[in-house]
Image 1 (cartoon, rainbow, N blue to C red):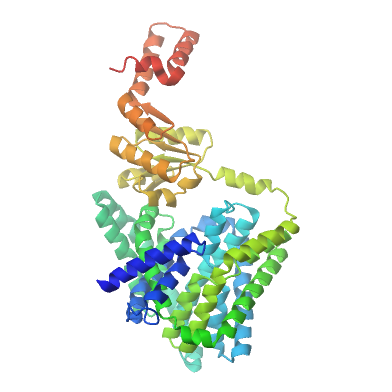
Image 2: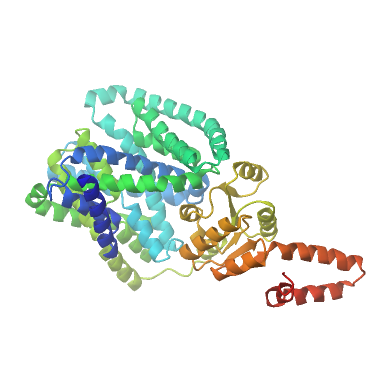
Length: 557
């Protein structure tokens, strides 16, 4: 109990302080681990066991990366992702590997691991800073995100190659071709089986309507794929990544992603804490010059490479500068790669501490680097307003429909006719399958869950329309939307005027009782049958609509 309480208390306090200082949660976890670990207060003595448990956080992290890798997303930015992003990883990795090989006299295997581990920037830092400044859709935001996207993809082959690099040179040379063919064949088989098996199985589980069973199935899917890949000699992370890719276009991906977020967050936090526990201050202090010099060299080298490549790709100078300074740090995947490399014997134990210190210092310097980059870019600002980027950003703001029954489908049809994009969420697996077969953009999930709203992009929605027929579910949805996204207006379907008043009181901009819909339809037919002319009928409807149907509300008893 003491160890568990120590882990939780240290994590909460350290992450709270680190986040308040603008340094991010990763540095908080590292600090917490160092504080309570064997080289700190000694509250946790078995850092190695903690690290093994925490490695499952890496598994879930790779799964989340895979589930975001939709082919359409990569297609739109393919030139930036695979061209600019690919060259950044290769050139930065080779340059850093060459410098470490020359300066520290490391073997080429170790130098490559160090070089490519430091070449990867922090996705968490980069995306968070862009989101905080609402710059994800800006010119430099897209440029930076493309580089981060390829870096996320590059993690997978780097993790797969680690066990191969641990082998002797002769064995690697003789068996590399066979190993690659075997891995490709196994991956192809798993992809083929998964593509045709996952959908039907998830549909059966979703129809049960038990969320606990759905979560258990999602865990079985992630860990099962990870175990298969590990069993045949690849990595747990590779299996999890494949599972994510297979679910990237599934209607269940949003619910699964929401269910996996707590596991990823807790286990990955434990992994970072275990890394902090293994940080022995003695070798860091003994190599203070190496750590400080390595950090400065890393920041300068990556900035120069990213700025140069951005210019080569036709980006304005200020865009390249902002991207270079934003992505100059090493990333959280460096902890993963270096720790696993040490386990495989590729990285000497005495080098692990200084390298982790370099990553920590470079991440801590990120806010200052971004500030410097913005100041420098403002002096050489050459970017004209880009109508293409603005139009794309505006067109990607969909209407979010919660519930896809009769009313939700009608709303979707009207939006489609007006060429307004939408995303609908429904918890009925049969309804979702049927709607998707008919061409509707519907995903499976519980709409009132904050994690679901986040994964479908509710933050950027232009409007949320709640069509749920359960008053309690509708109220929960409205409360969640107003609490999380107060800037997004909410329109909601209500059973009667009493429910409509309640929903309006808790923040809905507009609540439409079903009695109004039925009354208007019946009244229209009655007026037409009674011979009332069209102009008179239109005047009556406009009169009834005034002041939120005030006249009809007078007869609601």
